[in-house]
Image (cartoon, rainbow, N blue to C red; front, side, top):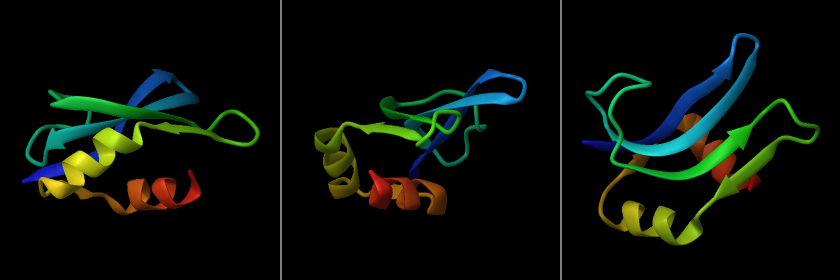
Length: 76
């Protein structure tokens, strides 16, 4: 199964996330299929950048977003 989820980047206590499409069995920071956006919680307000075209294409193909990514999509 393919998931749309967050991949953590950045330094200790300064997280930065990539919104990625990955196989559900791969580890959090492991192999990905495609990067479709970014999320920076350290800015005020938080910065969310999502490529809507790629997101819609992957969701049409059956990719399931995680609960956190669903929340980010609503806020974007």
